Each structure stands twice: as C-alpha cells, then as structure tokens.
Image (cartoon, rainbow, N blue to C red):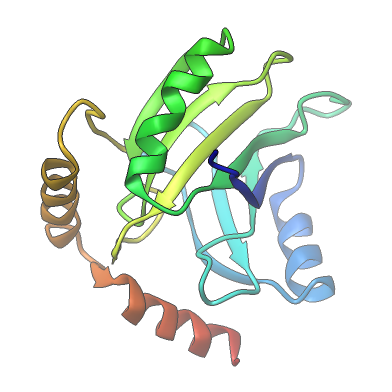
Length: 178
C-alpha cells in the first residue's frame, strides 16, 4: 500500500509581506519562487529550508479579513513515482471524492482533489526537471509513463529558466547557504 508523505502546506494569508517576513526571518525559510500564475488570481510565494524540496510552505494571498475557516490553501502529499501518482485517483474516486485537477508543474506531476470537508489535497511525485514556478499544465493520466515523461520534458525544455532537477537543487543549496 502506498503511504504518501506530508511535504508542504499552503496557507491563505491576509498580509503577504508580513507573512513572508515571518517565515523568512523567524523560521529561516528561503523564498524559492514567487509570482502570480496566469490561470490563478492570487499571488503565491514558495518557501523552503530543504534544497531537495522546492517548497515546504506556500503562502497564497487573498485571505479575507476576519476569515476563520479554510486557512490551508492545500495539503500536499508526496509519493515516490509517477506510477504511484497514477494509482491514487482510483482510490480517491473509490472513497467518494472527485479528482479536480491533473497537472504537471514541470518539477512535479500532481493530482488535486478535496477531502470530505472540502479541504484541497494534492498527491504528487517529482520529475527530473525544473521550471520556474508557479506553473500548471494539464496532462492525461491515461497516457503511458513514457508519453507523460516525454511530454513533460518537452514542455519543460521549452520554458525560460529550465534546468535539470539536480542543478536546481544545487542552486537552492546556494540560495540557502547550506
């Protein structure tokens, strides 16, 4: 049985600058990427203390003043392989949940769905590539692993900022002075 690992948490925030300062200065996390994706209406900042993980905390602008529910933007779990990402949608559907989104972020293949209380969850596996984030390109889980890998590599190599994952980890190590 696959046992996903919790790897990062996304949090809706009211004051992005204040939260970035807190997580950077108090926790010592490094901002690894930030921006506003073309298909999403809020600013996103990715932070990590681990050169092997692009992000461990994701801050997402837009939390309304006085909001006291749905603080977590998403809760993400990592699996080891693309095969494991492919396996989980069947378990999600069998549990009565609906798969909402299947995308590659260039550096990961992801499946998004909600838990019974409508909290967004993600299951993902790393790819061997990196492109600057945020990025989200739909892909078809019905394709073979070889087809998914070839399509993902092609789209990554076409993006400015492309790197192999190992090279990006080295860049992140330098960014984090480890």
